[in-house]
Image 1: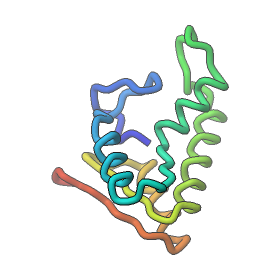
Image 2: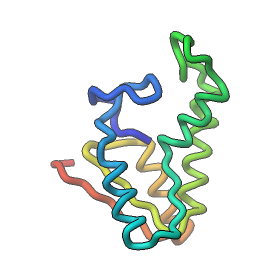
Image 3: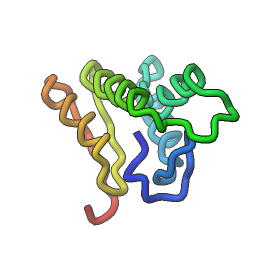
Length: 117
């Protein structure tokens, strides 16, 4: 969903790599196909967080059941997608699971790995 957790961004209350790339990838996809439906795992996480947590919750995502459910949803979304694009500035177990599920389902998988992984 957001990289290795070693970064300085704190989307959804989690430490992760910068998420600036998401808007660039979204723009490129929609530029090529204005009718494309984009499923963003970070957006799915934000939707679930709004359902599960209050804004004042001091420790969201501490319940393993929530983490497992969210991971299950994003992996299932990857397997159901036509194409999966994964930006990997560092190793990410969540992204690996998404990519493996998509590959196993016979989907096109594109990985962008700009650093030494």
